[in-house]
Length: 366
Ligand SMILES: [Zn+2]
Ligand SMILES: [Zn+2]
Image (cartoon, rainbow, N blue to C red; front, side, top):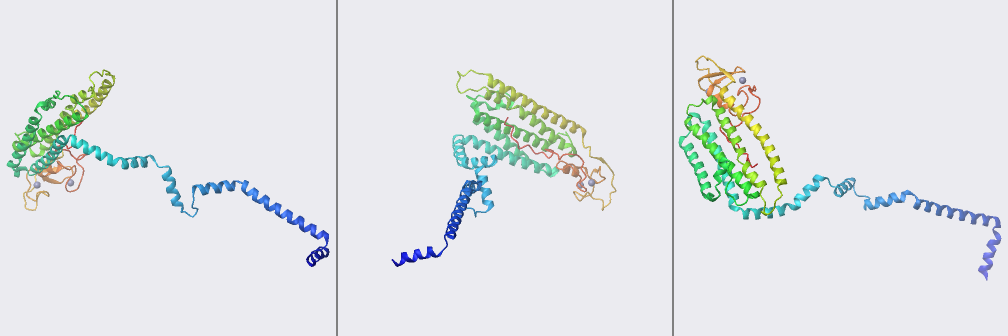
């Protein structure tokens, strides 16, 4: 009773207009707040915020991490290739081991040939550098070693008549599949390189008065150019057999092999053309002699010594840069370099190749 009486008492004490004003003000404020909230949710701010939350769950994450995420989501083509290779590498090894197991003897022969060529090459180049001090016994042993390799190879694969490949005739092989093709052309190529090394070694031993030390570099490079030309002809027949080879003998379409064969021959002719040009150039240089200096006369005093051998001049040669050396000394230098050993003046454009008696290590497999 007292409380009701008190409430009524307060209402009674506040003027009626003031109460109505207060109620209206409260209603307006609530309406404004509702409108603000609705506007916020309807605006693009929310969409932006939501997309930001989706793309970057942790807003405090550094910018760099965001970039990495973007790269991971959109990797470049190179990254995809690397990833693919990384994931397929173990399977590649499995296939290689299987291939090695299947053709173990073939791999062993190729590996043995390449190792033999490497050592034979090094031995011959060292012996050629020694000039008159060369070891005849070492060179003879080298020739014997290479010839024995050639004979053993043909003896082991006697049934296949692989020696025919060296004279551009087809070997006796049941099917010329990819493995047989590569194996035959790589082995034939290496065998012919052994023959080339033997020719160079025999020339180093006997010379046959073909040329002096000054022009012997030209002889070695001419033999090498001839070898490269001949070696490029060896794979032609096996390749044509390979291109026309079918697993199923009833298979008759010849259009694709014919097309591939024409493309192969066009490419081959292009290669042969550049090799013939190189060979002709070598023959021309061989007959040209030593065009990089002229014979000269030096006072025979003790202070006049050749800068290379540190001894008195023998057949002194005056280079274009006016530096003087023994003819033999500078010839051996210019078999490997294209500039004067003293002032480095260029005497010809490119560094000489194969003038020192070395043989190409590249494999002519096509
Ligand atoms: Zn000298
Ligand atoms: Zn010089």
